Length: 70
Image 1 (cartoon, rainbow, N blue to C red):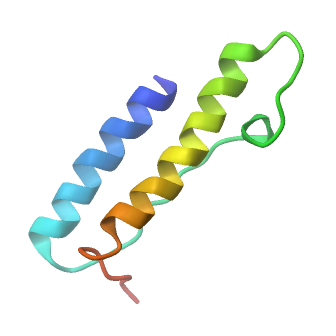
Image 2: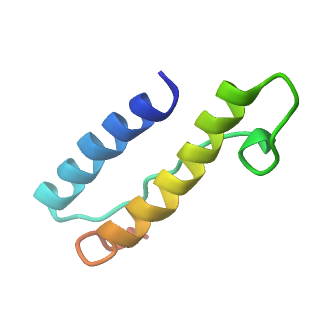
């Protein structure tokens, strides 16, 4: 699942929010491995770093379309 699953969830949720026009927030959860690489956990750390970057990029890409709901 990891980065691909996160991407698919962001894609679906972002599309729904834009279609509904009500705004909202998309929250991504990763782990400390997304900030620091851990020995013998290269695939896990790479996925968590990818989720962090994907979350930041999705926020920037959707900023013009999705307003924050109260």
